[in-house]
Each structure stands twice: as structure tokens, then as C-alpha cells.
Image (cartoon, rainbow, N blue to C red; front, side, top):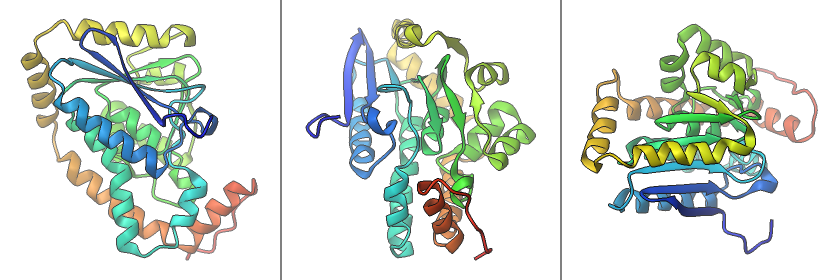
Length: 266
């Protein structure tokens, strides 16, 4: 990817529909601070657009989003806790922003959705997957809590508590076919049809009144028990504690060095 390539692409593929594409294909659309900030800014702008009725979120290339950039995360783990906590809020805040966006959001998952990328997909109101899509929590491999970016709130509501904990505790990759069977996604399409079908779905939604759509999303999520924002806050606190452990730094180093980590419980 050229240095001058935008990190985020926003277009209007159909009337009333915005397409938001994470654009770091060479890094599987892993989240960096510039990309996180651009996505926050784009979501704020989309929220204010009255010509929109629905938003499609996807990734460029062969991945939806591989989570946080691990190399950068390892460097950031040495900063003080208040700074790190603020950074954690910036990342997980993307899931909150997607949830609180007035327009319905469809995640078109075109490849791996891992860690914070999994959280982004789960925060969308509807998920559709390409055949090559795959889902993984990922954080526990880094010596962190598997609860991040709203995953611990969304996942048990979609597939049940036991199934959710199995995926979170084992770091197991869930392929698209299983994701459809378990209800993580509402439909699976061939990769070359995914984006077209997602835009068609969004365009169909966009035919309805903006007030009807906005209030449907707002009331639906308000009527789910427990506060999503409070759940994310609890995740943030536990993640900050975890990221400041020696085991977490060892896990990130081992990941980058392609070796098995050695944990010492500290």
C-alpha cells in the first residue's frame, strides 16, 4: 500500500447507503491510531448525514480487520496506566460508536475478523460473511483478557454463554460456515458476491423512513438488558490490568517471534 493511500474509504454505492472500507490490506486492516481516529471521525460525520439510511462496513483485500496492530500494541504496553487506559477507550470506543450510530450498520465480513476487529463486526446491527470469513477473539493469546471491544456483551447474546466462553477461552477460529450455523452471521455468500449482496441488503433497508429505522435501532438496543457502555467500561479496566503484566509482554513478543510464550504468572 502506497504511503499516500487513504486509511479509510467512504463511498455511496446506492442511494441512502454509505460504504466504509478499512484500507490497510497489506496489514489485514489491523487497527493503528491513525486508522482508529479516522474511523471515529467518519462515524461522527455519517451520524450527521440525513441523506443516509444504512451503512456497510468492510475491509479492503483479504481481511475484514485483524484487530489491533500487534507491533504497536507491544510498544504501547510500557506506557503508564492512565495513558494506556485512554488508548484502550479509543479502540473499544469504535464498537460503541458503531452501536450508537443512528443508521443501521451491516458488517460485510470478507475475511478474518480478530480481536478488536471481531468486536467491530459484533457491534454491527447485521453481519453477513463471505466464504473466507473467519472469527476469533484473539486477545487471550496475547496474555490479555478475552473481554474487549464489547465482545463479552455481544457474543453470549448471539450464541449463548457456554458457546461464547468456549470461543473466548480457547482462541479457536470460527469459519464462516460455522458462524452462519451458530447465528454469528445472518447469511454467507461467495466471496465475489459478498459486497454486492451487503449493499443490496442496505439498499433495501434504505427504502424505509429514516425515523422508523432510527427508532427501531434505538429502541431495540435500549430494550436489551444491561448497559453496553458499562460492559465495555468493565472490559477496559480488566484489559488495562492485563496489558501491564509481564506475561502479556511475553505473549506479544512470542507472537511476533513466532514461538510459544513462556508464562510465569506475573
